[in-house]
Image (tube, rainbow, N blue to C red; front, side, top):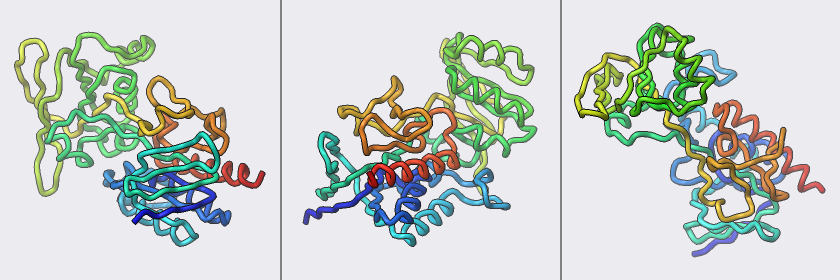
Length: 313
C-alpha cells in the first residue's frame, strides 16, 4: 500500500548531520520526517572506537553514538522512516520525493545529508580489518597508532595529506603508490619528500591485509609490484586507504542542485543553502575538507536553523 507523507522539513540521511538537523528542526516544532536507507547512522556505524567527539571522557563506540542521537531525535518529535529515495522533484513546491517502497513524500523544505563514503580497494581482507587497523581517515584514527609503523595507500592529495598528518603520531609512514609519480599538488609533494618519517614505495599496490584474530588486529601487508608482479611482505600495524571519497549525490545529478567536479553539493559561503531556495545540504555530502562527525553535526544544526528561517518567511 502506497503511503503519502507531508512535512515542513524532509531530511535525507541519518548520520550526524541528518540527526542533528532533525533534533533542531523538531525542537523548532517543524515536525520533521527523516528518511534513511538500509544503513542508518552513516559512516559512524562502521567506526569502532570514537575518541574525538566532544562530551565523552572515555572512548565510545560509533554505532552507540548514532543510536543515542537517533533516540534523541525521536524523543523531541522526529518521525524516522526507513526508505530509499529514488526520485526527487525540485521543480515546484511543495517538493516531491518518491521512495523505493512506493511511498510519496511532500516537503516544504529539504535538508540533504546523504553523506559520503571512503573509496575502498575491495579486498576481502581489507573489509575484514576495517576498524581494526584498516582505516579511511587519518584524522580520526592516527592517535591509535602512536609510535607504530603504518602504510598509506594512494598517490593524490588525500594520500599525501594523510601521510603528512600521520607523522605527528606514528614512528614511520610508508606511502604506497602504484605508479612512479604522485598526482598530488607539487607543494604537498615537496613537504612529503622533505619529511624524514615518510618513505615512498613506488610501483606497488596492496594485495592483502595480514592480521590476527581474537582480537582482530592488523599485523602486516602483502604488496605486489605493478611492474613485474613480485610480492613482498611488510610488518605494519595500520593501513590507511587514501584513494579518495565519493559523495552520495547520484540522486541529484539531473536536478538543479549544483555539484562540483567531484560530485559534492555546492553551498553558499558560510551557509548550507544550495542553488534551490528551500533545499539545504549538510555534512560530508558538501564538505570534502574536514569530514568529521562533529563538523557534520554542526552543519546539520545550521541547515535546520536556515530551514526554519526559510519557512517562517
